[in-house]
Image (cartoon, rainbow, N blue to C red; front, side, top):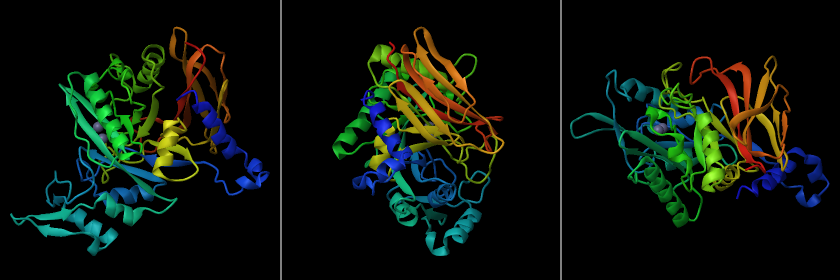
Length: 410
Ligand SMILES: [Zn+2]
Ligand SMILES: [Zn+2]
């Protein structure tokens, strides 16, 4: 699969970067140039342990520059009838004040309340079908159905997001961390085959509660994506003295996948894993921290997933790219410049005994890396001099992570 990706990428970028070419060919005059669509694939609401009503969360993403959104609650789809208790206590996630705010924002008629058998007030949660009717606009805003499959092996928390699924997937459980992962990825693949359309699955926050080592998830079949960046303040993206950062894990996993396991490259996503929508700042799990930018001519689920499957996307916590170009012997970026801001790009890869090392760096807005021929894979990360406005960790810069591409080395 990955051997085809450079060609497909090249075609995509050729169309994106050379509008004059399409002008010369009347047959292509109506072709739509690919663009980058911004999406968050990991979001919680009152359907599980988030503190925002689903319509409040959807409205936030719609009005903050996102094109698509995946609500991914723990072991539940946003469907069916679910009533959430309204309680005026400090620990309550739905108080009468918040209900009034929802009525103010969306209209009194948009909030359905009842008294349960004990006389307690409850609010009905809006389903994904209702949210689609309320917020989706063709080419403007799209939902993909999602679930955070939330499994455990002994003390390890094993969380996988399944995106574009039709039916709930229950945690599959296994006899080791790797076996648990494999069983869940297999269940996702089985449903994808049954429903006849792709489901994108990403492994979430491997360092959360130090749940797994990179070896635990290096050899999983059907695993194509993992969270290199998760905006939840408790997930330990950067590791510690005894645990590698997720970005380091990424390179170690990809080296093993290509050299040992005969598996395709793992791609990295950035997500919010947002839970909190009322208090903002350090230590809060807010939306707007990390996202993916997916290159596709149209905003349709199958097209977005196909593009991600082909590596035609990047992960971001603030840096925007105009284009990514990949030929058989180069990886080049065009970075969206900003007044007074500098950008440093590092090309990272594995060659010989050097695993996940910086191969070159550049301060240009159009950095380019030419393969020497012995690279196993090369990826890029771009660091902005601008600080993240609401960072995962204090002092974080805005970043972009560009997907690895295969080299000719072994
Ligand atoms: Zn999780
Ligand atoms: Zn989550």
